[in-house]
Image (cartoon, rainbow, N blue to C red; front, side, top):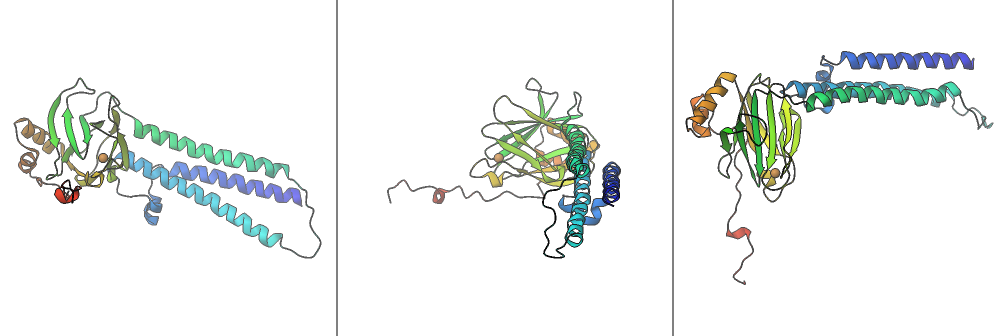
Amino acid sequence: MVARGTRARLARLAGLGAGAAALMTLLGGCDVGSAFKGFGWPENGITPQANRMYDLWIGSVIAALVVGVFVWGLIFWCVVRYRKRGDELPVQTRYNMPMEFLYTIAPILVVSVLFYYTAIVQTDVDRTSKTPDVIVETVAFKWNWQFNYRDGIGTDANTIASTLGSSDVIPVLVLPTGKRILFEETSKDVIHSFWVPELLFKRDVFPGNIRNQFEVSSIDQEGSYVGRCAELCGTYHSMMNFELRVVSPEKFDQFIEAKQDGATTQQALTQIGEEPLATTTKPFPTKRDVANFNSTSGE
Ligand SMILES: [Cu+2]
């Protein structure tokens, strides 16, 4: 009896394991998550990297749910099957080798599968190439951003066009769709963090010699997306917004040309038929006046 029960349980476990593995594989491309609002994960990613992270999350949640439902089932089954029937205590020392073995192997398998897919997606998100189509030097400072379009990678490359934010004008980072874009980050003072929620990605911006990089293999959707600093960097950290404006490659080329001809970012945006000012965020009142500072007149 016991042996047959154990064997049935083993078979059920093995079946579930295989099912979970098959699910994880299947979920590589499909979109089960949209029925459940992404299981809490943002669904508005605009890069292939963002979509792969989304798929990883959906696969992981479904694998966790499969394991969870199985464990909940076991708990309720034990509660009913081995409920108290009389005053006689059951045997207090007993073990079951196959079950003990399974308790060890199953978690290792689950963790291995999760690790495998995480490593693959992470490697893809972290990948940078030697020949990106567009290189943007992202310069953070207290408390704004400068975006330099570069003709190469590293500090030896030259800036061919630049956009600088101020307290009055939100910096607009114009980028093309369908191009491989490398971001090279550097800070003038403290640690900031470059974050566009729709990239589903942020990376710290360090001062000094470390130039953090990340790359998107393409941006798939035109539009305006708010960008923020995601590392508490001082008094006006919350006001350190920028806008990512994704346009067609043709418009992008015209934008860079206009900038190189001496146009301001706002003039160049107007020339390519885009809104000259940021549409997703606006400058904050910094209230940097005498009322903010301690009085020095001794009152
Ligand atoms: Cu900052």
